[in-house]
Amino acid sequence: MTLEILTPERKLFSGEVYGVQMPGISGSFEVLDKHAPLVSALKAGRIKVLRDRQNHFDYYDIKGGFVEVLNNRVSVLVEGATVVE
Image 1: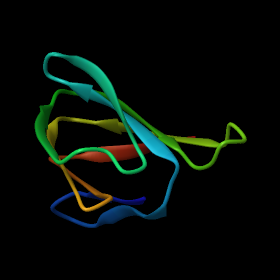
Image 2: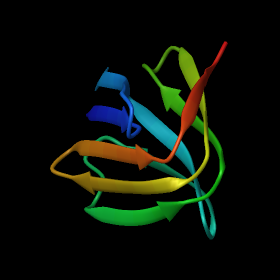
Image 3: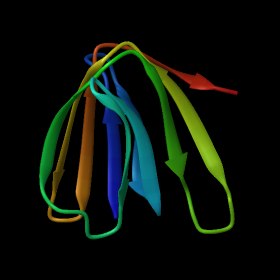
Image 4: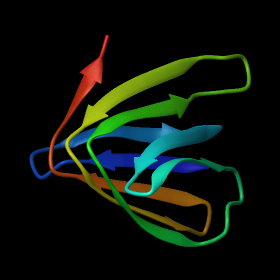
């Protein structure tokens, strides 16, 4: 599936991923390939991007925002984010 992480200033990430874990306002949740359509608010926390099935991860700390899942595309719109090294 395709993931985009966008802030008002720039595109932080764009590419094909296996899945993504996000901090929803009611608790953390995970989106994998072919997930049902979804729109959710996100609270401040950490996004974990699952690059592939071999445990390659990227992490982003976010300040909150929204996520939309539609047609195997995940768009994460956040107020601010930083890459965790």
